Length: 188
Image (cartoon, rainbow, N blue to C red; front, top):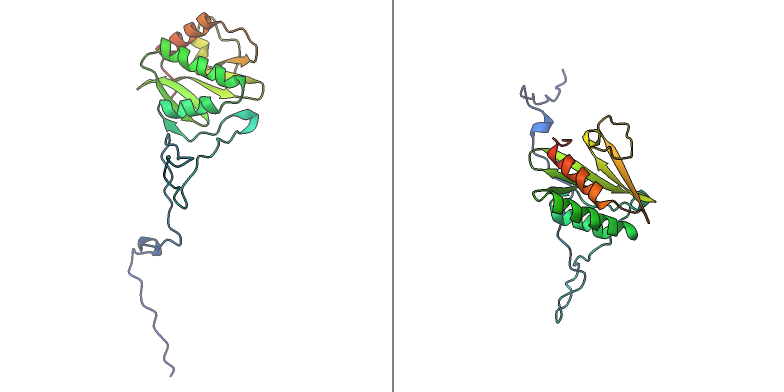
């Protein structure tokens, strides 16, 4: 008779997944949103080897800035600063108008879009850069009077497209912003 090697029995209910695994590579920590890396060393100091430098913001299709998803004013301001050409002026104008008319506004950047909302109520407005215009989205725009001009596939949403050289009706946009902020917002 030949002897065969016996395989050790696996205990019931255990699997490979329950054993801790060793990682092949070390995880790298990413910088927190809103923090800028120093691009030049302080006066009188030398740059450390391997020190990070600030990278320019990547522009996606249509010139839309790629900004990391984050809450607060800082990522919104980074988005606005990275908007190309005349569109940055529109972004600053919109941001100031919204803050002036909705003092308790909450800001964030998600999906490469600045969003404005009220804490606990969701988002009422966002804007996005396209090649020839800035699209302002009123998430419940069909409830606004008068209706913002741009239709949407979504039954609740309306748009306002702002093109270079457009004459802006600040009073009308401010009215829409106030109305939109008073409505329950969009919650993704």
